[in-house]
Each structure stands twice: as structure tokens, then as C-alpha cells.
Image (cartoon, rainbow, N blue to C red):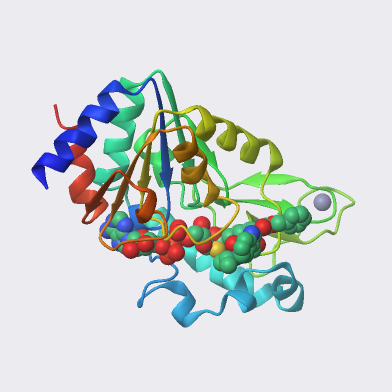
Length: 244
Ligand code: BJW
Ligand code: ZN
């Protein structure tokens, strides 16, 4: 393992363009549940009842309750050593990007600046009628079924997250795809690699002959294309990848 970590560190040190692609697993040690593990969210909450526009339209109260609770949790927990290790990589690499599928805001709270949130941010909501955007990362919790604060607008607010069947922000998606196609090293942390189009990112990097480093306690859909599969929790592996 130490030898693999050393080789992965060498690849990172050599990289001129470094991409970090993250999923729910990086936040697990902070106390945020993942989706598809045995104790994941999709065990208790069916995706089609909570993470689609249809579900929201059918039952905005129930869906908002779920997001309110998850937002309260995201505000309460703290970034873990893996999030801080990513910040140190950003500090050491001029040409750098984090493309995250996470909505928990923990990369930013750790201090990361170059972050693309492909699936949105749980602290933000927007009006389904006029598009008015509200940033509540300071800590406010939304009401039961929040409505638009604009005068003369009675639109329903929704969480600014990407549900199944919805398009990712085309600008952010294009930027992350472009970066992946040009990077020479891609560190994949804590994702099952099952949700598209985000999961294409490591494959685009691979096509450019980038070194792929996969950090995950379990093999994922990305592991077969990884040069280095570093098996273990991100909070333990990532600090070892960046230590002085
Ligand atoms: C650790 C650890 C530790 C544990 N350390 N690791 C191609 C084929 C088939 C289907 C599709 C396709 N292309 C598109 C689709 C449909 C669909 C899709 O991908 N479905 C698949 C599931 C089959 N995609 C979409 O619908 C997307 N939209 C779209 O395609 O639009 C097209 C369109 C075009 C034009 C007009 C309109 C539409 C949107 C996908 C949105 C996903 N949204 C969610 C919810 C976000 C909001 C919320 O959280 O409430 O995003 S779903 C959920 O999955 C969430 C995550 O970001 C995403 C990825 O999950 P992630 O992060 O990988 O988590 P897990 O749980 O899967 O894995 C955790 C990993 O961590 C595991 O590997 C663990 O081992 C590991 N781990 N502890 C490190 N300590
Ligand atoms: Zn409005």
C-alpha cells in the first residue's frame, strides 16, 4: 500500500493539470450518509419519491422536509481530513479543479475555491416561477413549503439540486468535461461512479492518458480504469497522499 501511495503521490506531484472528482463517500466520515451503500439514503428513501421533479410536485411538503433535515445536518457537521487534503492539493497546483457531485458545501467550508457543484448545493433554493435564487448557507432553515420572497410572485421555492431526469448546468458540465479531457491526473474520491453524466468525468480523463487514482474502501465502477486503487476511507488515505 505504501508503495502504491508513493507512486500516486509522484503522479500528483508531476501533474500540470489536476482534477479531483468527488462523491458522497468523501463526506461520510463527516457524518453525511451516502446513497447506495447498505446504510445509504436510498435504503430508507426511495429516489423516485424524493429526488425527482414529479415527486416534488406531488408532495412538496414531504420533499422539503427531507431537504430541511439534510440541510440541518450539513450545517451541523464539519469538513474532515479528506476535504482539507483536497484544499492542500489546490494550494499546490495552479491548474486545478474539484468537480463534486456533493451538495453539502463541505469542500467550500474546508476552504476549497475552485469547485464545480455538478448536482447543486443544498443551501440554495430558487423560485420555480421567476427563478429568484436564495442562498441560505448562513444557516437559515426553509419553512415547510417556502414561497418566493419576490413581491408579486407566488412561486414555489425548490432546492437548487439536480434531480433524476433533470439536466446539469450545461456550462458547468462542459467545463468539467473539458478539464477532464485535458488533465494529466484525476483523483476520484468516494463515488460509486454510477450516476451519469457526471460519471463520465474519469473516463474522459482516462482517454487523455491521465493517471487515475481511485480512493474508496470498496471497488467502484471507476476502479477498473484506475492506475492506483487506494482502498480505504478518504479521511485516512487523502492525508497520506498529500503529507509533506
Ligand atoms: C467512501 C467512504 C469513505 C463510503 N471514503 N469513499 C446512462 C445510463 C443509464 C442511466 C442514465 C444514463 N445517463 C443518464 C441517466 C439517468 C440518470 C442516471 O445516471 N441514473 C443511474 C442511477 C442509472 N441521470 C440523470 O437523471 C441525470 N440527468 C440527466 O441525465 O439528464 C439528462 C437530460 C437531458 C436533457 C434534458 C433533461 C435531462 C441527473 C442525475 C442527478 C443525480 N442526483 C442525485 C441527487 C442530488 C440531490 C440530493 O442529494 O438530494 O445526486 S442522486 C445521488 O447520486 C446524488 C449523488 O451526487 C449521485 C452520485 O452518488 P455518489 O456520490 O457516487 O454516492 P454513492 O452512494 O452512490 O456512492 C458512495 C461511494 O462512497 C461508494 O462507492 C462507497 O464505497 C464510497 N465510500 N465510505 C471514501 N469513508
Ligand atoms: Zn418568484
